[in-house]
Length: 463
Ligand code: PFF
Picture 1 (tube, rainbow, N blue to C red):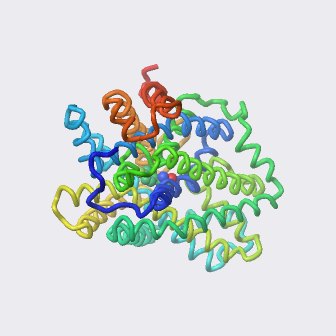
Picture 2 (cartoon, rainbow, N blue to C red):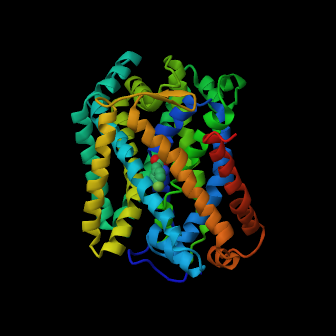
Picture 3 (cartoon, rainbow, N blue to C red):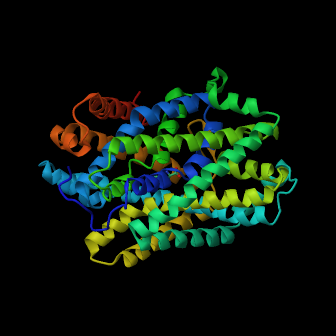
């Protein structure tokens, strides 16, 4: 059991309170915006299969470890790592792991907020009927016009950061839990509706086939390690919100009675189901309307509005969809900033409201870089065999999700599997020493660290 019983920031009101908040963190733009476009860029069914393996073999064990560390330390990730290292008689430098997470959070939020801004903008575009009977050309035009206008992007980005700041300032239970409880189930329902629409399109089975059946041809000109495995692994970390302390911070508000292992499986399953549903909804539309699966970050913004333009009550459902996507992004953005806010409250002796305001201002400033990188500062480069055209925006995304999060995950695995005493993990997980524990222990000691190491060494060109 944990050394302390509760965090100074409060505690989730129940097991479901935690689970919903963690699902709120995991389910976000990563599932609906990022997953489908990566599938389209990196090999369809093969990418999906590798992604699922990464979630199961690396993602879930690391999520268990991260929550375990959070609950045992009961502080923000920086202090948690320092005090756990202290308890285990290890170097205080483990605190750097927490710092890396805080940094990754700012980098991710800088572009996350801009994409959430697109979502906000689309609520109004769809609501105004811009897409009624629109074809691919119109859909592309609307998207390109939006991202080339820095003032509009800046306005939406500002509004989104303000929304996130308001909820974080209200604190763990009131702010985070209540928002998620109602909105997550609604988003799920709307996704089912989109899938129903996709089933009515001509190329439904082609879409399914693309998503679920690995096709050798999609491997042509691709390097398995760097073009498929690395982005799939990065997506698993990004989508499950692991490797940067967000879920560690949430774990620090978790009651000692809740089962970490059960919670993690539930969170990972919910997260994966939402991503797959998004894929099932999107690819049939992509093929039916002759769009390019590898259209990059604009994919959902250029496909789904066409569907809304065609279906009955499309304006209503379209508005609702983007509103719910906004909420999903909102509950994730909150968790991206929570480690930094918790750190400021614990170490700078300031109120939660003040800490949130400072963190919000910093996140807003970072976001300016992304806003400009989509237009004035745009430059292109190549990564994983794909040309990236949005300069810093793409670079931030790649550095954070493909490198910083997996590196954070590697350190978490090494800490929990090799440096912490076995009794400590046994006591915190509280599931006995049976096969479930043994499987986790094996995964966290061998599979996750070795897998991550091999991928890293390959990514930096060592073999
Ligand atoms: N998991 C979120 C998504 O899929 O949109 C993004 C995210 C949230 C990543 C929190 C990392 C994190 F710590």
